[in-house]
Image 1 (cartoon, rainbow, N blue to C red):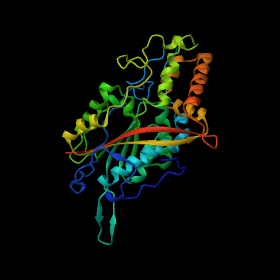
Image 2 (image 1 turned 60 degrees about the horizontal axis):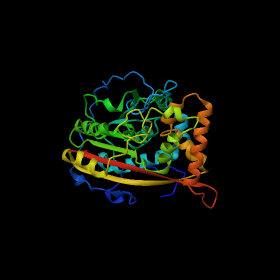
Image 3 (image 1 turned 90 degrees about the vertical axis):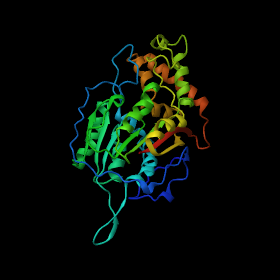
Length: 361
């Protein structure tokens, strides 16, 4: 699918017949007519925020060798806000029929959203929280992230709305526990891929198990370990005899048994997610979509990944400006070889993402 500039508006209710056709489903859920979410429980949030640490999801990125690890940059991330939010809309479109039910009032027949309890895990600067807020008006939403800068941006956005139904806490995805109250939706956009592979599916299963009957979990993760953007990160960092070689000398890039390396673990197969969740679910949907983003040039690709997967590499180099500049120049040079220029001089970045939606038995 090609990039478009405007973000679509999710309707108040999306009939099952209008599920977007571009996704390739791994499995189709059972009859949606059986889904009946528990009413919203107004018990206050009791989860205690964890102390701040420097990575967006605390267990995922290796420590910097030469300088303290830097926080994530909300401004860098939001340079591509429209493109990064497109998967949020696609994921929300799949869960809208599961969470919204028609209600007939005494005066007219209308579709009214029940008051839902939602947790947005890895909410970042709040772009996903904003979509949830717009799609499920009146819902009680808690956004969670481990980055202080991301949460500052999210809080600033929602403080302007003066809405008491949305709050944000700082915590670790790997250890996050749902509060002792009814939760209707656990939502996560571009967060679970930061967890090490041995913890990724167990964390997802733990959260899913804690949901009540008919509770929904919906996640999306970049699935680009083998994409040129990420293979070239590993290759560039591994080059011998460069100004940045010493910063990667004590880590085995590409070796998933080395927890100190800057590259992330590959995403598990669709079947592994299905097998983990299906015994607990009335239905599981797994699909993969590759987004085709048109960017100005290879430098644009560098700017994109600087907001996410490239940062652990740059954190290792730290404040050595010469090594940092050389690393980025070599990485960009290799990107130019991997991504051919289009007819208008731009480049097309393919970005695959894996989606998982499950409904609790």
